[in-house]
Image (cartoon, rainbow, N blue to C red; front, top):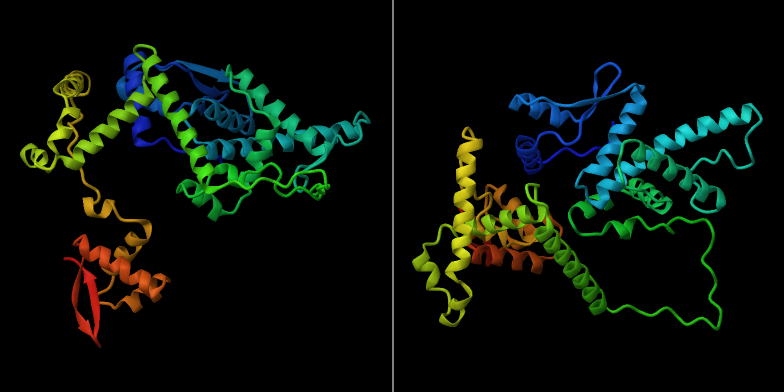
Length: 384
């Protein structure tokens, strides 16, 4: 099974709107039997909208068709680095198998050279591994160029992708949750056979990086990323989907949904007078006009889609909880009887003082209540 990630609801909606406005930009790719290699969503949306869908046919076998589908998604999709590594590793495995088959054929005919057949499994260093990585990168780039894509993949990227794809499931889960970076797992030097070089007396000891320097570096990366997205938003061509703009608009609407339950009279009572100059009517007028135009376009182009209503998946009090506090609350809601901090600590596998502190935070947020005392200790239960 190929590792192509599924489109999210937002991505699917943006694709539908793009096809409705501009038509299909990339033809649906078919094999010789008429089966879809790439473009299932485009074909489905065109059928729903009654729009003619352009196609392009390639006479390839099923294995090649699957490889081309992954290659096209690697170049076109808005993927995270982790998703890209999964696709590249999948392609590398297929291209490595093809390279080994061709090398065996050359050996049988006497045209192979020494080291021509070098399996990548278990080989992390040396000239043969670097040659094999470069050959796989060349094959991936050849497929990309053949499909009219400008993206290019280097041999080091192939190396990092294979390391990440073979990482433990727990490490990948940490990356998806944002607890670790892809770089911390996909280190090109990880697992090398050769020992590290010995430091001579002339070499200076490695400089220790302070936590503040790490925080400063991360802040610079975030600032550069924000500036890049801001520039892309301003310079986006007219009539095309502006992803940075959509991200900001969705975020504004999400924040407005959070404070929607407060009346303006109550909200202004919490704002100091010296801070009122930040909230100018001109900015609010822009958002009002934007929202009105969105509603007009919805009624004109998608009358069957009802307007969205604020949906609160979690109460505001729960949104401010940490991961540990939320785990405590979820466990507490499964208990039919009140529990002591010691029972909670044993169940969640944390220290008793930490459990007592978490339960106190839940009580302060009105998500839990003190149900009484047992043997001189408070017992807690989830709020009704």
